[in-house]
Image: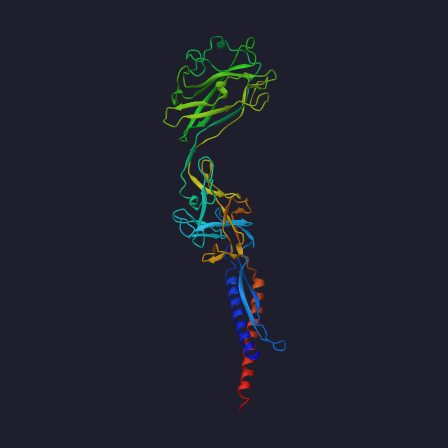
Length: 450
């Protein structure tokens, strides 16, 4: 009978609207949850096939949840360097254990409010630890991006301080072309302490010091001395000595003396620009330095300029002068913070000015992210409907980009949720009215025999 059908149809309406109310309640209570994805109720009819065209059989309604996981939330600025948002597709790879990762405990989230725990591991508000690929000393990440065992928990306090040895040095210097030839040129011999610049026996026409760093972060001084050759026999050429100051900082082998690291000839073209062909190979090649302090040997390459250009050493008729100089390397420094760029590279910042890439964050992508299974802590796990995950470097393979110092806001729209709340309440009330009306009709039927 249709009265009984209407009764059950009303009951289904109560159940469907109750489910919808639960979804709305969750959405409203998570309006401030970072990375939360709102759930919507999808109502669909329940139809009972009629046995006759003259009789209608009521069915009902059901409500199924759909979590809009692929919906982009508004990005909000943050002052924390470890607050991370995602622009586009993808999820952070996280686990509930900082020391292990497996297919059983791996989870995915867009809640990027990561802060260091007591051991320095990055953990979000849901207690989930951020995973990434470690970057080796050569700046490489593991080649097998699908290997879960290659991932490690990002730790920002376990980084040790570092020093960096000098490997490159560059100077912009002009050597005066009209400078008279020194009388010492006639007896100059770089291999003799009695007649070279390193020992002080010969006064250089021009001399400058530069500061370099050994592998232990100690500062060392190297002196470069220049002595103009006899213009009549060797035009546009200068004797050069590179030596440690003091000489006791380095060990030398013959023919080097007095702390010499390299000696040779620096040549110029007739137009005053640098002549690479005429410059000695000993000056252009990497100079090996054996420090007496016990620090590892250094190898420093001097950049004298580009052949035929005036971007390094020049010989013009103006006073000899040092225009600028630069060397790489740094003294020992401690970690003072971390930085994450949009490509997911985690970089350690040291108080000596050095930066070092330490990890690469992956983003996991899915064929159907809306079918992921929800878990506590605003995270998800894969399901048969979502398909397998693929770990990608941000910005590649369909993955989005990292937004550093940013948090993704909840996708809940309060105005929309309160509107749904009103309509759901009305729907529930209407369904209950169906039940009371059907009950009154059944009561009338019960009284027919009286």
